[in-house]
Length: 303
Image 1: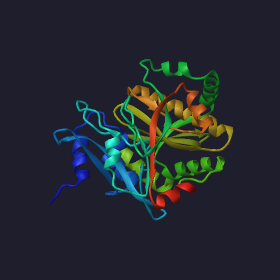
Image 2: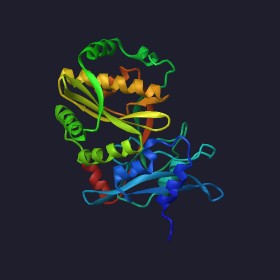
Image 3: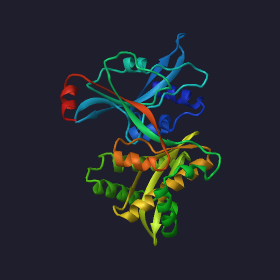
Image 4: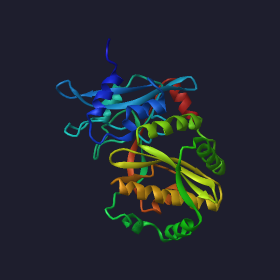
């Protein structure tokens, strides 16, 4: 019986120190579906595996597409620490032909794209570095945020929970408040990823309660080095906003106790970016790489 490329990837992943959360085979199974994700095996000069990059091959309105999986900020490059840099350009060249290619990739530092027929945009995540002192991260909070947190601490309590249904209700409430449609995958993927995070001891939901009623919730996940704010929701009033900020402060302090940096994940919305930066988070770039062929070009005109 032949061993599949994803099986070989699973063996390789287990041998890598500090592999990113988004690279975990169980994460990819949860956000893509079992056996619905693939990998490119990047070979070194001796023909041995230098690293892997996973991706999600699916369909968008009946059109074949290679995309970043849902709830996944960027595609990771998985390699052993003693191995040489893996070329993103070679990865892109190795992808099967597809009408829609729309990927976000976290390259190695200082890695540049050579001339290539892919459109590349820079996107930004917002990251708080690890601080040795448990309260040091707060030194970079804005004065307005610190004032709001002091008030929120008096009014709300925080507890972990497995109530996915109520969490999703808060997520949908946030989208309604922003007057945008919730992602079509939201209910299914969150319902899949929460038990997967719990099983692998890599994440949980926290709620902020006001007199026993949950008014905000966040889902966080982590790997060996980073805690990620995966998604969240809240009531659409000032109470919900304050409770959400308190939850993020709690998650940042939790991350610090693990020795982690805290990644808010990206947003190109100025208001959200400013909110993340009020915590002292610093922007870190990653790439959005796109290419459209045939009917994919027509699709891209309207999306």
